[in-house]
Length: 178
Image (tube, rainbow, N blue to C red; front, side):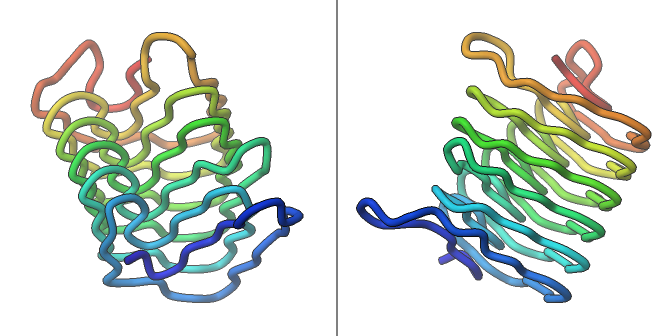
């Protein structure tokens, strides 16, 4: 399973789990090979999420917490693989993610979003981050913002999106598709 699974059972009160200065590596799961977050807040800082695999979504991180914030700061997300969506990070459902001063590099998604994939009612803010050299066999080598309804929201500021590749090309395919 995932190296780290963060979630609640029954009617437990949501808590924030802080992971600081840790290397999370060689996990394997259906969702979130490195970290799987469901119904709890995550504060991930100064860490490395590397060489994890998800057969479905979120090779490095899978964030699906409802109305709770996941913060990823000064972290390296590298060489993770997803069988479908979000090689590095997948933000789904009603999750809210703030990613800052982070490197999302050399991740692979078989379908979409080599670096990051966002869908559903999710909200993602990316600031001061590098999204580079990620690969997708379909669209959105770097970042893929899912089309359709409900529509995920994303804000990108002071971020470098370079050197990403999408085999199918798509409308943009090498950076962000929306």
